[in-house]
Length: 427
Image (tube, rainbow, N blue to C red; front, side, top):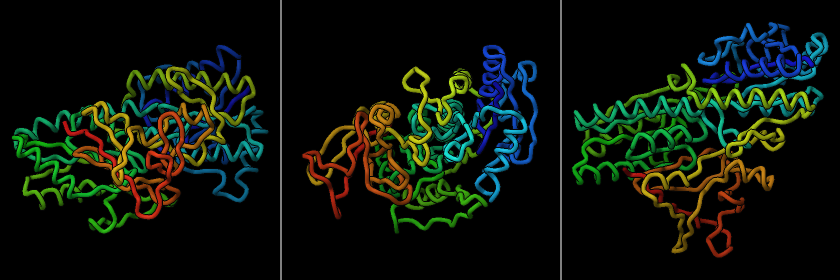
């Protein structure tokens, strides 16, 4: 057996641990050879590669980044891209390629499998938004870095009796913001899933001041958006791959919070610091398990699969069930704050989670929330969720997907019957 391996998309802590595990498992268990491609698919397209051995991969566990380099180049950007990939694989005698990447990379891997290029996917992203897995490596490290920063900001906020706005990464989902905000004791957390209302954020801060709490932390995911027409937003540039260059929402929130409340407010943007550096022990273990499982799937000929975490088990997940989907925040996490979660509208209410986990996807082959699915407003002095974009209004509970938002008696909402949820997270 001869395998290719590449790291694609944004970097994250744990990539080198996966490479190390792939090489050690392939070489030691199967006597196989591993070819590492430089800068993701560019290396495949241009024939830029190196042979990876156990000796070459020694000392990689604690190293951040990736020894192979990475890029966002995909074969489908070129008319002859797939043909060039096939030629490289034939010339090197490869049985298939292990693709370590996020949503875009895994979608390309699925398409390549359809076009006759055998691929195995390994999910990586600090955002933890890949469907079909309960967790991606890199996420734990990012949350740890963000939480440490919030802990440090508490002391300076208390010293000066200020409000501190902390902007963290999170383009389409707010997993980092939600977890770090909970762990760091934030007063309010803004995440991208549903639009937030700045007046509600101000109300939380003012209520805390009346209680004698003069220092507050507001955690904002970079992709959070205000309700339409409530705030003037900066215009975002678009990169060559069609992604908006986010950043700036934290400044808008800080400025408006200070103007409306009269409380001194400061902004800290963590940015890429949460994506770099040494991976946590949890991420090293998860990345290692994923790498071993990916080689095992290749040895069994189970191409077109991704390795995923279900509870404590690493399991195969069809790439068809992952591509084009994202995993949004599970609001059951709010129970870790104040123990209060209620989804209510027009006098009817029901408890539950707005987002199904990876287990629901595997159990019923049901989709998680797609990009654009929305609930207009979720707030109670705590989490506010911003919208993603467009699409059907679909809400998934932890054990099953409900489809259109239900009013609790089996009826579906329509027109202006939009739900309002309360999520108690004020600490």
